[in-house]
Length: 73
Image 1 (cartoon, rainbow, N blue to C red):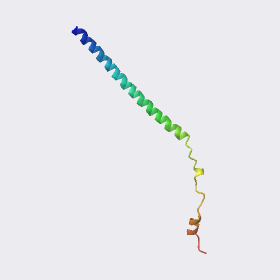
Image 2: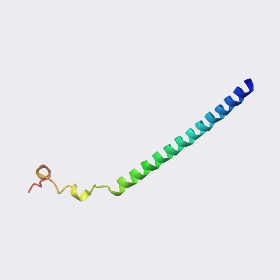
Image 3: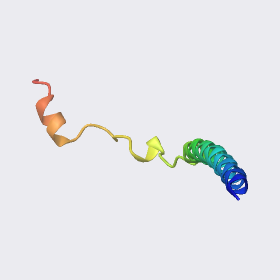
Image 4: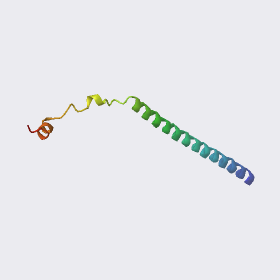
């Protein structure tokens, strides 16, 4: 009876070590997938960047600038 319990506990211990190794592999795979998804997201956001500077440029000096820089004749 005692011999069977020892053998069974070793089998259970090896199952736990197999699961912990699988867990580490799954964790690393998930981290890698998350990193890849982040890179892909940044790439897509860079490609579809909707900032168009021609919509935001200054059209010229305003009345305060003209009053300050008016030449004396």
